[in-house]
Image 1 (cartoon, helix red, strand yellow):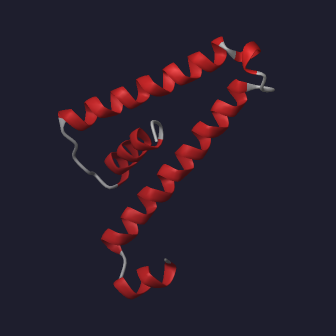
Image 2 (image 1 turned 45 degrees about the vertical axis):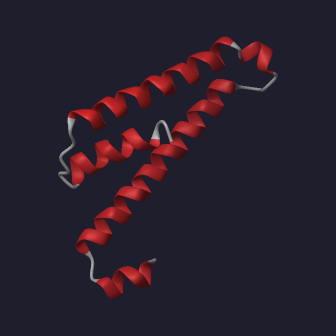
Length: 91
């Protein structure tokens, strides 16, 4: 969630022209700081954690969260622009 939320906000701002206030932007900054702290803690404890490659795992999780954000933004686009019957057919 700490990466999917900023991605959704950026994608909806870029493609759906949604306006966001200062509090939501501050929330995005906090989410990104959380991602940075998680990645740095995995890098720091990488040899002690026992996993094969914690950085690769973090990158895969970030990629998955980004794709989840693309899915959420696409759904929002369809809800705003598609015909109701067509939307319910796709869902």
